[in-house]
Amino acid sequence: MEQLVFPMTATAASDADRVGPKAANLAALGAAGLPIPDGFCIAAAAYRVQLASLGLDLTARRGTNDAEVMAARRQAIAIRLGLLSQPIVPEILEPLLASRQALLERTNGAPIVVRSSSLVEDRFGSSFAGQFESYLGLDNEADFLTAVRACWAALWSPRILRHMMNHDASPADTAMGVLVQPLVAARASGGGLSRTADGEMMLSATWGLGSAIAQGEVVPDRYALSADGKLLSSEAGRKNHSVGCQHHGGAGTRVLSGDVVWEMCLNHDQAVELGGYLGKAEELMGMPVEIEWSKDDTGFKLLQSRPLHLEPAHVPDEIWLRHPALKGQPAGVGWGAGRACVVNCECELSRVGPGDILVTKVAGPALSRILTRVAGVVAELGGSTSHLASLARERGIPMVLGVLNATQRIPDGKHVAVDGVAGIVRWMP
Image 1 (cartoon, rainbow, N blue to C red):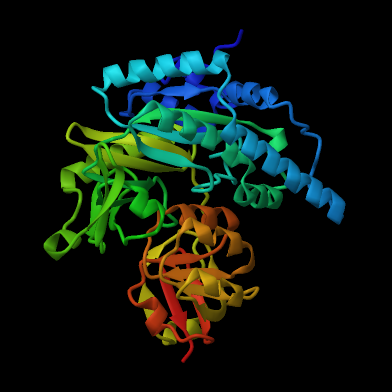
Image 2 (tube, one colour):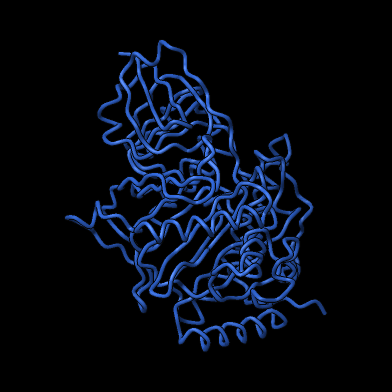
């Protein structure tokens, strides 16, 4: 019988077809000697075994007529509910609980993280960044098992169904691996791009766990390094809150104030060390990469490495250079122009029309559903390594994040241009 659960150090953990690219890429980093957290993988075959135990029909496909569409929706709901509600079958449950117990013993009972690792995730051109599920700070068996089932069920969520339809794919044609690790007691976290449009490397950082960056909730510190790893510049962000782990209460948010908001999370030597890991990750994968990382009392831990999509810089028409400009953090792709649609709440997203430039406060993953119809995005919070920035790069949509008071300073309805490489937004008075 095929092994369904195995440690990150196993050869099988580096097989993307068995555990998904997210888990496989991370295991490959560890095998190459780069620092990653301890942990284990639940193979995609386990998802298939669990799905088969539900006895559901998987023949329905999203079609072109109303009857086919409704059949596909009913199928997705039935599968999602089945995966969430039915107990895990013994052939998966027994090795799963044994692996969890061994991990707890090795890490002195540290809270656990459960992360989706779909077979279609983190592949070049379709990272699905921020679209699946991750659960942090799990400290009991019941929550752990619920999180595993929820990761399986995420493959059939409405958000993923829409995303897959845009990629001409179906959840029925793929499977879900799961990655289980101890939660890093992060003092700082962030991301990194091994290549920018001007040939440099870039790091981002914030206090605590990295979810504040991933969700576009803060403006992170930004570090530029040369291709050979020398620190060229650093710029403090606006880190007005941090996300941390309360061991028995899950992740909690702490409001920050005073000098710590502007204090740099990494010193010179730390930025150079992390830049070295970023360069090695690119070398290992044989292409530009985007990473996520955390730093605890023992040092850096790499949490993810995925392919990075880049486009060459655009030279703007001279007329734009004469108009007002605001600077922010670039998503690293493209140039776009259109009518500014200033939105202060998600309930206003219906106002955003095809070809508009969305101007908003928080660039979170929830905005992914309108990326297909906008010509660009500008947001007051967020940074170059947020999940939404990753999705925008894949789609060639220019984005500038961390633009101070953008919703107040950019007039609604004005013609706006967004330079996603230089990180500049301009508008015609």
